[in-house]
Image (tube, rainbow, N blue to C red; front, side, top):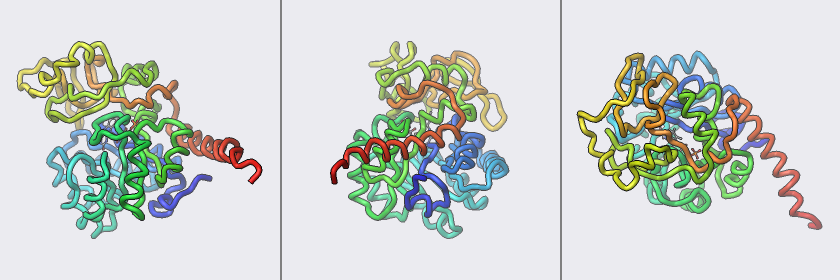
Length: 337
Ligand SMILES: Cc1cc2nc3c(=O)[nH]c(=O)nc-3n(C[C@H](O)[C@H](O)[C@H](O)COP(=O)(O)O)c2cc1C
């Protein structure tokens, strides 16, 4: 059993979170992690507010455990927040921007508020606004990245700066070794994205999952290339042939041209929509077209992901692995004392 105070605070068994991943962490994956004793956080994925409400209800039908819903503050999310408040989701998780205007309304109905940050400065600002849990994101993370500091250097700094507010480490953690290391750094839990991307329950397109399995820690790049609709926002993605072709010419991807080349289709809230070149969202299993030229977001921890597993297997292996490392490896260093 690996428990921290985060488990008591959230009513979960293990301090393991499935990160919200737009178009990847849907209701099935979030529910699977929550049912396994962790915490699943469903991503927003461009759904209009009423579609989000239906997804929240679907998620509730799949689990009776706590779960979260994530909203990216680059987008107008007022109505989405209202839906989350009306549906009384257990946790609202924010990223990219200032969550302060939502905290009081969420707390008023008992919703806990998470905010993901990439610096001590933004962590302190979020705590001042009343955020309950800070997710400290290192630059090795997959997806959009707020800061420039590695998980190893950032987590203890954030822990020291905002104590006693709980801190969750994210970025580059993909197995039990990273889990234990994060706890040693002072984190109260971990949030894994890239590892949960390669699960049977994840919504990632099969070709995308295949690329994740093949990639190693040197195969990702931090770029602003996929900036159509969300310009100049750094993100870590797999170095595909398409990415290699455009590195150094990122400004082209940030022009958000209305006549941009269409490279495929995907489904948002039941509707088929065109996917244009340089669009930021990764290909879900509903996507068709030139999948390899879409945004295959992944973190440097991708080198540790070799197989597709169920989400519950990953949670179990993290817990058992952490127990084994603590008992067999770390205890061994205490010899003679
Ligand atoms: C495919 C993908 C999509 C992501 N989408 C989101 C998102 O919608 N909202 C968010 O807050 N973070 C998003 N992130 C970032 C994650 O919350 C988290 O910071 C990251 O996955 C941690 O690093 P790791 O991938 O090395 O585990 C995404 C990450 C990935 C890999």
